Length: 260
Image (cartoon, rainbow, N blue to C red; front, side, top):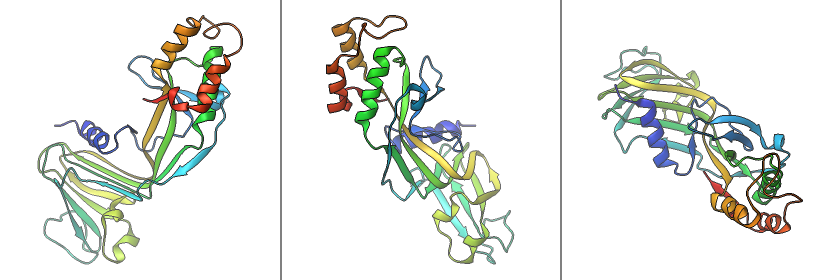
């Protein structure tokens, strides 16, 4: 049996470079969430408001829908209500749905519809706030924050565990009234039968992808070189944060923040 979740993660990393892959998809991720990246485990650590950092969010424009079928190694055969095409065994004649067949042992079908993107409206305010919190000793360099979130109205993920895996999907009743499209298989479907499918997930209001930022390592090294190492319980040096650091964060937030 293959690592079906690993196949899904690998496929999504190729398709969404620079984004983190959320699993399970029902786990809610929000812009401004804070993560502790110490060691090999990612742990929730509150949100930016906990650290006194305020921000506004704004919408971006991702593609409306996303389909991944492993370069054509997944075949989808649709079934209308009242029809009985060859290959179907679990759906009743009155059901509408689809037969999904996988050629490869690590093939993945991922469908996300109704995509929306939420992100920081102004990274300058966040960078400035982080500089102040870091200087005061409230923000550790191991902490990271969520800067962008992709949400979907519906999602379906199937990943083969062996060659020639297959699954029959029953679509929501309203979708069976007319021709069925791939988008109809996203979210409001039920897996009526599966064979050698190692990963199967379907649901609505999901969060498939997000981006994470942290303080730039070269910026941290430069601050330590210029102002001395941080001391326990206080910032890199006593006193108020140097105005030059605040100005740099405000004028060029990318010099302070980096994508993780």
